[in-house]
Length: 90
Image 1 (tube, rainbow, N blue to C red):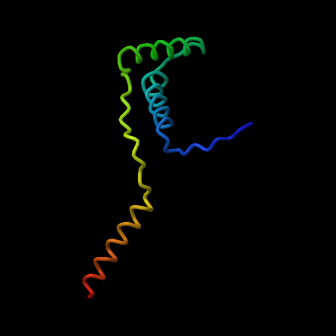
Image 2 (cartoon, rainbow, N blue to C red; image 1 turned 60 degrees about the vertical axis):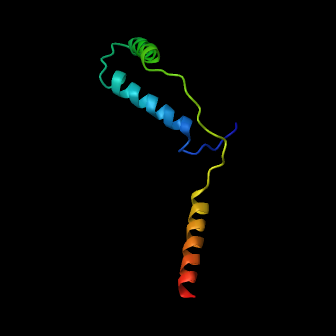
Image 3 (cartoon, helix red, strand yellow; image 1 turned 90 degrees about the vertical axis):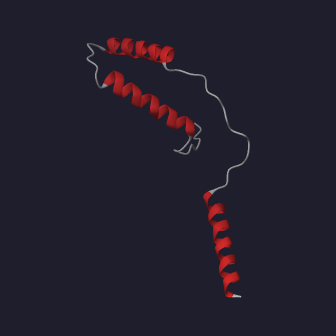
């Protein structure tokens, strides 16, 4: 067995949660199902409908530049503030 750490802010995980939320609101919450097979059939029909009507190709916009972490930003701002304070003192 292999465990892989995946941060909960991962973009693919957010997308999965959005899809499950849509299915919950549009199919399951309002549904009246006579059997598991009926639920399965309605889910598949909704997914087919959703893919035909709402699905669009994904346009990747990442430029390849590395992102700054929050700590680096804070450190830079602290350094700038410190320099300004020192300039005012002297």
